[in-house]
Length: 123
Image 1: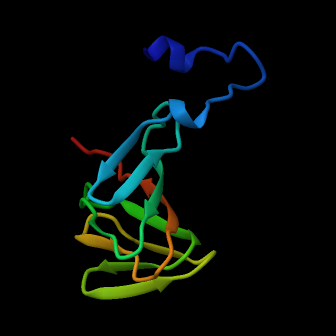
Image 2: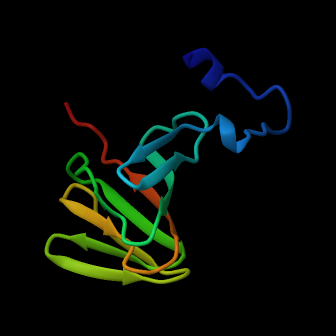
């Protein structure tokens, strides 16, 4: 509810346990939301890609920027005909309004974080 989002927190902080966050499966890839409630224009997700896993990203609204950080393993990002290979700690920023895809070419699990800054809707 909007009034809950706008109200002052009841305490100095709010702990949200991992099992309370939204999780979805896209093929072999597990995606967990990292924000317990929506923040306008921002989305943060943690992706777990088993060895060999592939996942097509969904193009977002025009002007959206996406930031992909590899925490562990190797993640390949294909976007607009370019390919980027990320290792531990690497970050790539790209236009999130284009077709893009993720791949773990390694032999171990890869963990990555996606930050999506949505373009403001015009109308």
